[in-house]
Length: 484
Image 1 (cartoon, rainbow, N blue to C red):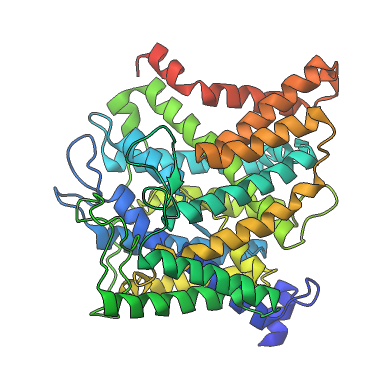
Image 2 (cartoon, rainbow, N blue to C red):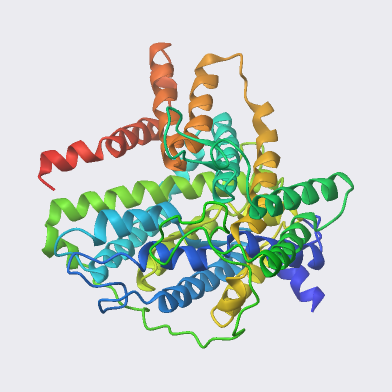
């Protein structure tokens, strides 16, 4: 068995073992398993333009959306591991699902099937761009230091996500500042204590050289959270409508022992899409602009993610490119279309994969492990829903720190590099958008090269990328002009 795994995944060549890969795959799963719960809450609770919810009917069907979310994530992550041999996991993209729910499906006369049809179309277009070599050519045209800035920016982004999800950073109820620490400027509540203990435990174990520190931290914090909940009865932050009624309560899940450990999955959402439905409901121009928006968001997020994960795993070549980039991009493109076929929104590469890399994952075997756990989660959704944000997010903060260390690879004394890199890094967390950071960095880089008389030295694709991002940033005015 080990010999077969060695031949397929080249474990020794990449300096890893089966145990390391299994551990890394498990860690990646636990750091991104929240999507099984969060995606249904994002797209399963929003009515489409005809008043129906995903899956049909006038009431949300959260269980059905959760099952499909886990199924598509599991299949595509296993495919990434087997085909691309890369420690990258895939699942429904959070920014993309929000756009599908609130920017597409909720448009007048648009159905959820119409919206998912656009997702399928976007994935097929990206696949075509990959097979023709265009997507990879774009990737190779990007300067290495901008790729480094993307990795650092994503590190800050996921650390910020972790701090926000844990309630350490919050939007204040009132006042002049956009964010604050905790509740009213102070840390409060037992869930916060669980987060702090989990974070410190991971850091202490890392300093002491304990292998599996991130995984042990997540599991230990979850057990602690369950004990705290059993004793104190804290409850959830939000009520059934999603309104915050208990600011010091648990985020996402209340860590209780579930009443049922196994639940038969309902995969009724699979295949519920209409490829061309949106073109008849909102017109060719409107549907095309929506596909274009999805295309750009998916196109560049994945490129940044696979570089960041590869940098953390020390898998990049001297030009900053991961091994088998073409295969990675093909699987990712298929995942985008598969998300539409499964009616769970576009699936994309998850930066949380870096947490598994931090535990030693270096090959696709880790992705296979993560994918199998996603498939098991279709049956064990009650168990997955035990882990609260406060127990899982310390891993994101730690991984953000690890990725931040790459910042020394940027020439900060060169303004034509430093300014685009700076904008890339800071805009990702500040705008809560990886795509916005990448776009700002690319456009600024091209402008600065031109004003220094180096425009002719720019790769033609850098010009094209800059123009595409200008269109992306101006998509709303374009829609207004088009009457969409």
